[in-house]
Amino acid sequence: MRNLKKPTMIAFFLMIITSAAYSQDAEGCKDHAIFNRMPNYFIAECVVNFDLVQIVMADGNEMPIEGKKTYIYYAPKEDYQQPPSFYQIVKNYENAISKYGGKKIFYDSDRATLKLKSGNQDVWLSLRNWESTNGQGYYEFTVVEVEEMKQEIMANDILEALNKDGHIALYINFETGKSVISAESQKIIDNVVTMLKENPTLKISIEGHTDNVGSSAANKTLSENRAKAVMNAIISKGIAASRLTSTGWGQEKPVADNATDEGKAKNRRVEIVKK
Image (cartoon, rainbow, N blue to C red; front, side):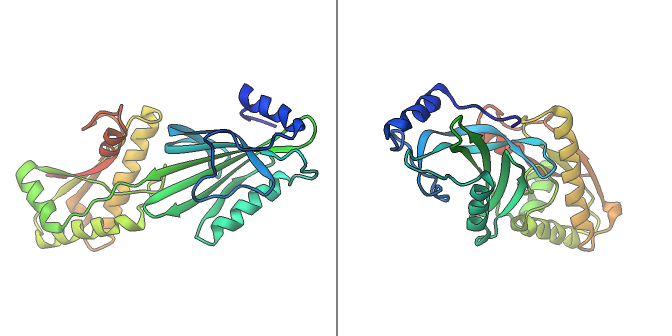
């Protein structure tokens, strides 16, 4: 197996004592609210906190995703003679989330990634295979919940801010790590278009910004692509391309403290600047 996180000493100790018919959940641990465990498994270890988690994407490479993390180490009960294969485990979770529009992003013999939209959150599920020396199958379960920042803003609000301050920050949500505008943010795009149609001489610059998670170079590229995606979405709705420009600043111009979750959320923005 490759790139697997080995069990901590606590988890390893709990594996050993399962032979003594100790198969109850670790103190303070419980299943995630969305996902149930496999039958005949117990929780050997768990951690719940806000963290940056490396998630395997469709191309097999890992990408850091930050959000509320729920980590659970599941072990088969002592009397479970034939634990399921890792493929069965992944298929079980895939079937469960497919009913709600979720899908599998990546799978190999050691790792799997699934994704689900729940309310205003992107929910990532990372599964990793671990097989003990006696052949029993243990698996690591990590959920990362990423909450989107919502914004209710009208065309006249955008114009007022541009006339007063010369710029306005728009919190347009994109697919994680991509420049695809989420369906929930199309209303913001529509209001920018309305504002531009009502003010036919107005020209604007669309400028992308990120927080400081990840490399500076990657963040700059992402911000450029997102700004361009917003510009193209506006053009597609009938606004002349000559009235628009786009650029990306990456993490260079924060408006809040990147040391806090709230600050990071404020820094992930697209600004409309009056030209």
